[in-house]
Length: 167
Image 1 (cartoon, rainbow, N blue to C red):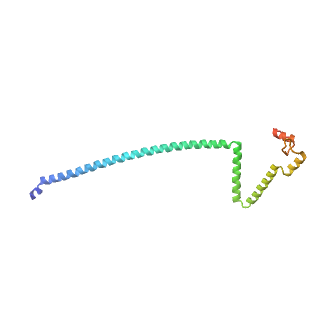
Image 2: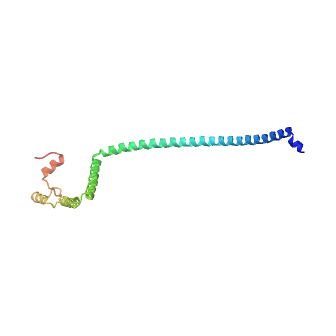
């Protein structure tokens, strides 16, 4: 029995069989690795396709938003050119400047508030017709022909309405 193990042919066959087993194991492992590699390649290509599609959608959305932004910018510029909107814009600018001055200029706020309230009082008095020049004109001229009081003579009021300047 010891003779069979020491026989060179038997040793060769045992080595050949063991090598064949390792070869089969290596081939199976290679097939598994190759299949995994193929799966990873398809996964990567799918992922790249999805990212490319998403990038295209993002670029389309960006282009659409840029065009919409430009049209809105043009529309705002066009609306700012209208006289009423210009006046509203200037009023907003002045209101913001006033707020800035009230915050940053220590002596400005009280004087500004007094000037505003004085101007408001004068404007309200003029609108009610109780300012001194209007009282004088009303006493001298009387009320208008339609029952409303006017601070101007009729000829001057008609000239003002028609846009003519009276000297």
